[in-house]
Length: 169
Image 1: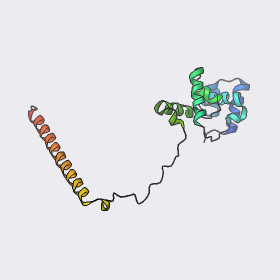
Image 2: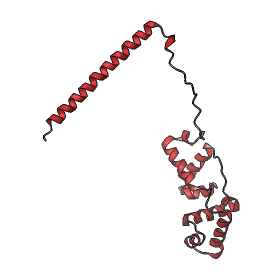
Image 3: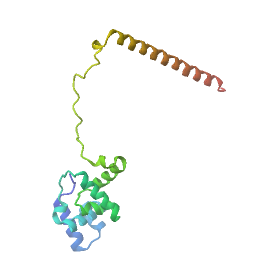
Image 4: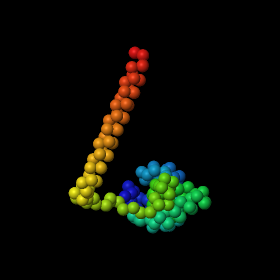
C-alpha cells in the first residue's frame, strides 16, 4: 500500500501543474520524494486520475515482456515505461528486468506463492520387496564405499599433518 493517499497525490499534481512549482518544492510541501512527484505527474498526464489510484494487478508474462521490449526499443527509462503502461510502482519493472536477465522469459511467468504441500508419510524405501541377493549386494557396495571414504579421510589427514610438520615454527 502506498504511504500517500490518492487525495495527496492529486493535490501534489495540481500544485505542481497549476502553481508551477518545481518537483522538489512540491515534494517537500507534501512530504514525498521528488521522484514520487515526478512519477505522479507523469501518470496523471498519461492516464488521468485513474493513473494515480493504487490497485493490485497481476500482469501476464507477455505484458511484462512488452514493457521490457518498449524500454529496449525506445530507450525509455524505467520510470517512463511504468507511466506509459500505467504501472503504479516503477520498482515492479526493475524487478521484472532483473528476473528476465537472470532467468529469461520463463522467469516472467506467474508462480504460485505457496510451495506444494509435502506428504506427511513420504514413500519409504521398501527393502522388504528386495530379494535376499539384492540386499547382500547393496550391503557389500555400502561397506566398500565406507572403506574407501575412510581411506580417503586418512590420506587427507596424513597430508595435512605432513604439511604442518614442514612449516617452520
